[in-house]
Length: 443
Image (cartoon, rainbow, N blue to C red; front, side, top):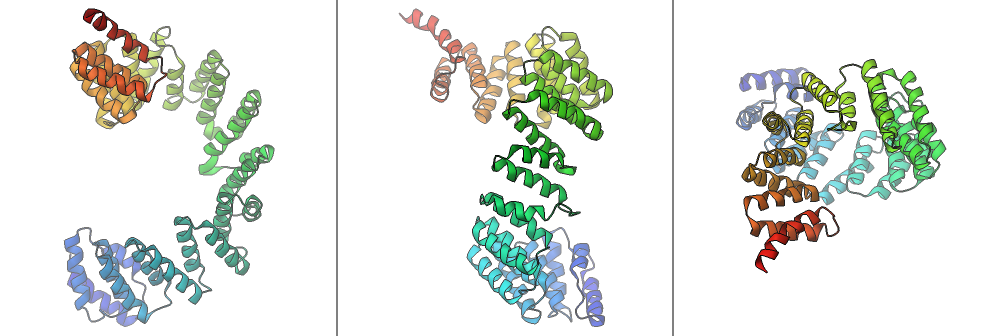
């Protein structure tokens, strides 16, 4: 908070080197509170070097943080008059114009800066990214093509050109740009992934699978999911299973994901028993993995596999005691079994502490309180769940709670809403049957 001393020290730095880059210093001294930033702006404004562009850009940054965008723009314009070629100054002005919501002025500034600084890749790429942000992809691609004529090996430009070409359905162009990045240390995985996407868009599915196989790193799981989807679309689930088994050998670090993917395919093939056996094997090989355990939980029958479910759900809560997903799963399982409802209610109420707006968790609480004959709480909770999700299943539960409360006016309103939103849903027949005794009584 010694802003006067900070200002004097900056003066000394700039006396030694008038062109010193103070950007990193700003990161170190910029206060978090607006009031403190005002004090620092005032101190810098009184310093001997207050007209130095490096000080002006510091002030502009602080003003922007304080929401004084127009003042910050005026300050950066003063800095640009003295140093018109500094990339950071050029981009800061563009960012301030954008923050002020003036897209036209921002584009004009970028266009002027790009033409004036034809050899500045950073400025030209920033203009291109802004055009893409404004959905001006054709213009962006045209500028990318011009840039790549001058710098044909500029990797970021090649990558953006590839993605923009895919968006514009220019698939041959996309391939041309992305192929250049196959040996890039920075973009290799992304290049393979989008080459696969590009091939898939062209319906060259074998080529797409070949590229997806090459993807690693952060895009590994999404690439394998896409590849599985191709196998399934080609009606080749057995080939997908064999591929995933080989992947477990090649990528043991992804074993959990691969086991789950195989179990999902077996489930799609109506072979739930094989899926459960596979997950049991997986849990032995990768113990204490909550996602594997939860995958098995989702496959088990709440009535026939009661003891096994209890064991697995307790294990999940030992591993992650505050997971709203696992707390809700245990609560809902107990509710389905209509046992230990007080314990189930504790679990789901604990889950809501971490995810208060999640419809599925609210639905579980509504279901449990309904079973406990606490119809008032059930109706309140299910009303909120229904408003969030508009699910027919939750709506039916909500209506039943209202009926059991004796609130027939609201029951009828909800029923009419459900009939309008879900006219052919067979669940609504349950609600219509509740009206029959009332109608018979009237007649």
